[in-house]
Amino acid sequence: MIRKFGFTLIPWLALLLAQPVSAQAPKKNGATISGMVLGADGKAVTGASVTCETSSGLTPRAVHTDAKGRFFITGLKQDSYDIRASANGAYSDWERNIPMRKNQTKEVTLQLLNGNTAISGIIPAKKKH
View 1: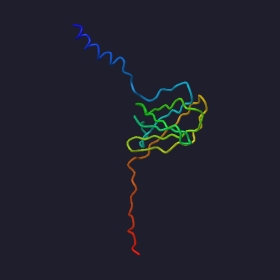
View 2: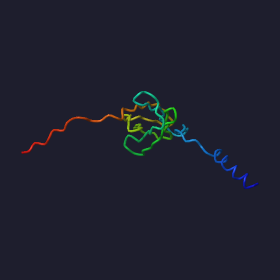
View 3: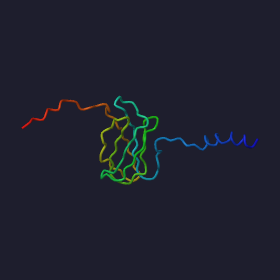
View 4: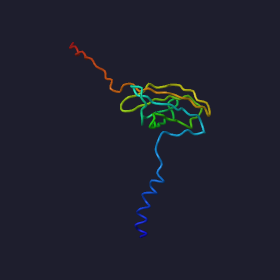
C-alpha cells in the first residue's frame, strides 16, 4: 500500500515543484531593457533570442522571448548597450548605444528582417592574361 501511494505521489510532486520557463522577469536591481520582437510580417515572435552586450563588446548576454514575443534584460549596470534579435535564420538590425542609468527601464522593439534573403547574380569569369 505504501509503495503504491509513493508511486502515485511522485508525479504530483514533480508537477508541483516544476517551474515554467519564460522570458526573464523584471528585477528591481540595476537597469532593464525590455521590449518585443516582431517578425518580418509584423507579428510577435515566440522564442526569439535577444542578444545584449555593452557597446564596447563586453559582457554578452542572451534571453528568449515569451509566448507574446516580450523580453526583459535585467540587472544591467550603468553603461551603453547594443541589442539584436534572431529567430529561424532571420536577424534584426543592431540597436546600438542605448544609454542606461542605474535603475532605468527602456522599451525597445526589434523587427526581424526576412531570413530568406540571398545574394544573387553572375560572377564574371576570370580573364586569362
